[in-house]
Length: 252
Image 1 (tube, one colour):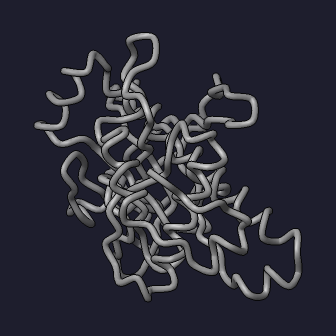
Image 2 (cartoon, rainbow, N blue to C red):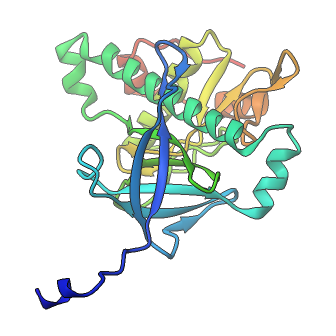
């Protein structure tokens, strides 16, 4: 209590203005939610493009779980700028891509749940959590997403090639999700780079049949386009989960 008689030092926090993407309306929110995060100094991990930092907040709406703030590495900035995109534009695509993968996972779940017998056979479903586009007071563009605990596993690479044993049940469901996204999109795209911890997924990529549309690069720099799709089709063998989802066999 005596400490309150002195000036209490403020903890170093990061203020992030967060924007949401509504996939049903295909629109970005114009009004940001401003959240003050306490961000850990050392990264949780680092990929080819970004570093991930665990963060917490006392904000009433966001304090129920921990969060991950992802920032671009210097080398990645150059790669992104070479595609004529700003970091904010690229982050918007990251969020849109995540929301599209999330939507496909929800559609697949809804398809299975139409039949109680199929639902019981299928078991747990793959899930992508919430994600936001963020901007700091200093103007840095980043993404903020729900923290997923547990051991990291990559089930399918961004090149479309499965990474786990064919007997791995979650791996089979990951392949079912890729197959489902390809069929539901009219063979225009496929969810790949399926990874996470158990059934909780994050950091997907979208492979498209064409890399450009109206001269604009589709999705993100990890889009290996038809190469990834062809790789997946050549390696994929339908399992019970594909049958339960009512999917047709793939052919090159």
